[in-house]
Image 1 (cartoon, one colour):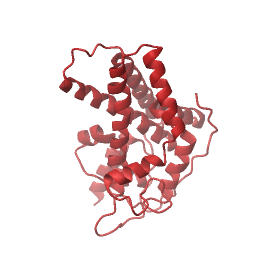
Image 2 (cartoon, one colour; image 1 turned 180 degrees about the vertical axis):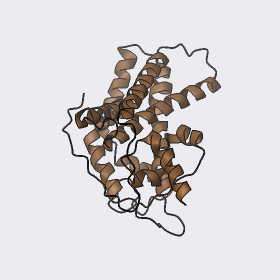
Image 3 (tube, one colour; image 1 turned 120 degrees about the horizontal axis):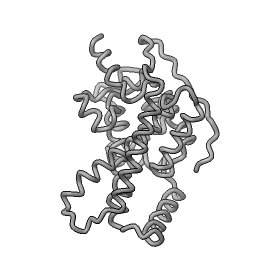
Image 4 (spheres, one colour; image 1 turned 90 degrees about the vertical axis):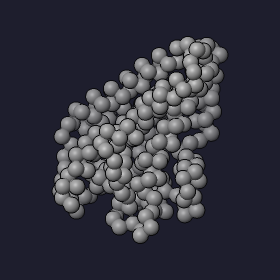
Length: 259
């Protein structure tokens, strides 16, 4: 497991809107356990099922389901970066965030924590590690530029070794590994980038109008959850970074009621 030094959680000073508190200090830990458990049980079952009789269309809902759970791992790690998975214990909070990123794709929690807070302090700017460099503005180019900042050859080589150990030593079916482990993780990165970076932080025609340089993608609550765990409520997240993902719809309704 990753050896994690406990980095401090930077704070963003909010002065333009009323203070909103996390109403459920224990909700984060329960959500994290539920998502990690669902992901692990689902992947464990899918890697051993016989798919030789499956039609192609049967794979699609299963792949989408596993992609959704992979996205949940990252969203949980993201909430840990904001200290809301388990506010009563930063050590446990950071451990869960580290575990989720390790399971997601051997990602470094301290590295992502530092970059994520650079993003919050300098959104959609040259010092924002998630933003394009002024040249890669379209979806594909921006995604590739974005991923280059988070992936390394060491991670790719390590994951390749794990894949081959699972295939040749543990004798797990190659197709199962590809459809239910490799593909969902890649699709999840596309999902997170599209709904969490590209849509909310793309510059509007009239230019940015708020200091967060983000906007909300308004959609029904159930669809917001399915698409990316309410990550589309992005202005609300930047305004209230200490609020967990499942409370963002409430913040969204609060803003709509005010305006």
